[in-house]
Length: 206
Image 1 (tube, helix red, strand yellow):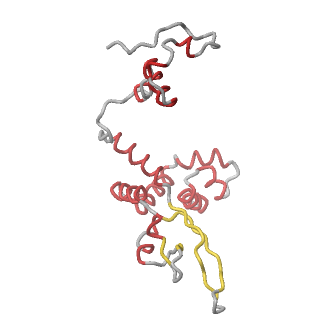
Image 2: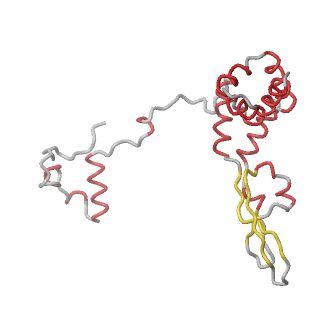
Image 3: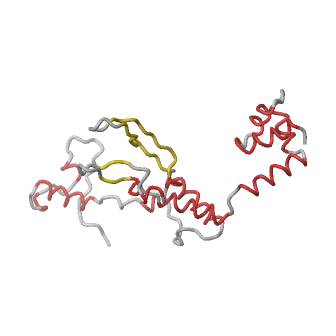
């Protein structure tokens, strides 16, 4: 391979974007050259070899996704001498779960004795919901859906619509009066409503 092609391979492994990799490698027509280089046999073989060497095996991917999905901030919280909750990256539990951390932020502070210390002010974990979605898609494709029950339509998941009789009973409870004292038709309950129909409010037929 030429030096340019080697630079393309290196850049592509970082960005996984052929156009950007070609631009960083020094090609003027980055879009077309990136497309062409991915189909160049020697370049494609070099990329495949690097990916095979450094990529995770499928079981490792599932393990990482499962850990992210179960991730909790509990590992990164402890109490200080005053009993206050503080964030930490140095405790034993935090050190064992650093792979869950996506981003963190620290700041310099001065303690009561004038010593400068570093304090963790924020920790962001990898998105557990995203990990769950990816795991669910994997199991679906593998023929192992997370739920064996038939798919439900949105309508079937809604609660049943209230009936006239149930509405009358609910109103009686709210007004704290016997249900017999309430009007027995919709029009009597809503005399100013032009849409109300003179329909008796009787118990539902079975």
